[in-house]
Image (cartoon, rainbow, N blue to C red):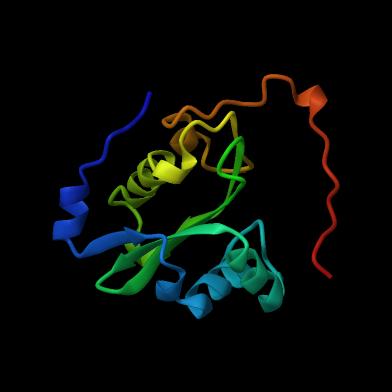
Length: 149
C-alpha cells in the first residue's frame, strides 16, 4: 500500500524537499551519520562527501535548515539503492519520512526501475508502505562488507 502525504500540509509548515545539492548542510548530515546513525558511525568525512557527490540526494528543509536527508545510488534506468535515510530528531513524528519516501518513489528520474534495494534494522514498517518487502530470493544476493577504517 502506498501512503499519500499531503505536500501542502508540509509546505504550509515551512518544509520543503529538494534534490539541489547546493542546499545540503554537510555538517548536519555528517554529524548525524558519524555520531548518531547505527549504520555509518565512524565514517570519515571524505567518504560522506564522495558519497553525496556520486548519489542522487534528497534533503528535507524547514525554513532553509536541514531537517532530513536521503541518498539514492542509481543508474536511473534499472536499479536504485536507498541509503542514509534519516529525519533529524527535532523534526520527527510529523510524517516527514513518509513524505520523503513518497517524493523519492514518485521522482521522474526514478520511474520504470526494475529493482529498488535498501537495508534497515528498524524501519521495516515505513518501507513496507512503499512496496518494499524482504528479499524474495536472499540466496541469490551476496555482499562484500568492509567496515570503515
